[in-house]
Length: 460
Image (cartoon, rainbow, N blue to C red; front, side):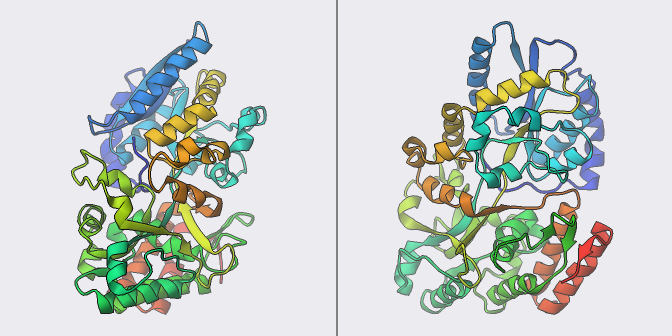
C-alpha cells in the first residue's frame, strides 16, 4: 500500500451508511479471542487488486515471526476498503474484546480519535524496554502521542512535502535549474517570472479550498503557517494549555500568500483549483506535460509515474527539480515540511498485547524497516535506515525528502482537528475566490474555531 497524502475525513453520513457493514464484519468473529498462541493482525488492504505491497511484506514478516516464535501463529484480518470505510470498520472491531485484533494499522490523522475513545493501549511500558525506539526521529515519535503524553503507536514510515519545479520551464524563464528559494518572496518572484516569460504555463500550484480537503490544509496552508514565527511553538495548537490558537499574524500572512497566488493569476484558474480532482490533473497531466512551473506537493508523487500506473513517466527525475519550502523570511531553520503517515497500534481490548508488540519489533528491525520503506516508496523514520546508502539510493528523491524529516511538523490531529481543518479550508477558499478579504477570512476562521472547539481557544 503506497504512502498517500493524508486521508479525507469520513463524514457523518459516511459513518452512518457504513455502520451496518461494519457491524456485519464485527459479527464475523474476527477478533483476537482467547487463543494465546494466535496473533491477529488487521490492516488496510489495497482496493487495487494489482497492488500487493503490504500483503507481500506482511507475509514475509509472518514467516520470520513464526520461525522465531515456535508454537505461535499469525492470522491476518485484512480490511479491503477505501480510507473512510476502513476507519469505520476498524473502530467497530475495537469496541469489543471478542472482535478486537491484537495489532492494527492506524493513520496518524485519526489515531487520536481512537485514543480518546479508549480503543488503544499505551505502548510506553514496551517502548521503555525496546532499544530500537531511540533510533526513531523525535518528530515521528510525536505523531502517535495522545494528549496525555503517552505513545500509542509505532510509525512505519512517513511522508514529507516540498517544492517540485519543472527544469524545462525554469530554463525557458531564465531561472536557475538548481533553484533553491530562501523566502516566500523568492517563490513568488519565480512564479511571476514564469508568468511573464512562459505563457501557457501555470506558474505555481498551491492546493486550496474545501473541495481539496486536507490536501489544501496540509500541502497548502500548513506548509505556510508552520514556516511563520520562530518555529519554537506550534502555531495552530498549544499543547501545554490544550487549546487551539486563533488567527494571528502568521495565519493572516499565510492567507495573504494564498490570496496573492490567485489574485495575481500565478496559480491555476480558480475553477480548476476548486475541482476536487485537480490533484489527478496535476500528477497525470500538468507536470508530465510541462504545463506547471512550481508545485507545492508531497513526496509520494513519483508513485503516479511508475510503469503500469496509467501515467508512466520514466524520466521525471531528469525533468523535475526539488527544493525545500522556505520559511517566510528565511528564518531558522530555513525550511519547513509537514508529515503524516501510519502507525502500528495495540487495541486496548487485544487478547495478546505482548505478542503484538513482539510482532512490531520484528517488523521494525533495521533490515525489515528498510525493506518496507523501499517497497512502499516511503520516507524512513528510523535514523539508521535514513543514513543507509541502500535506502538513500533506492529511487530518485528519497534522499531529498528524507532530509526534510528533521525539519518536519505533524498536525495537532486531536479529535477537533478535522473540523478545524475545514475552517482553514473555508478561509483559504474565501481569499482564493476573492469573496473575502484576508481580515474577513481570518475572522471567519476565529468564529468557526470557537464553535468547533467549544471555546478552547487562545486569542491572538
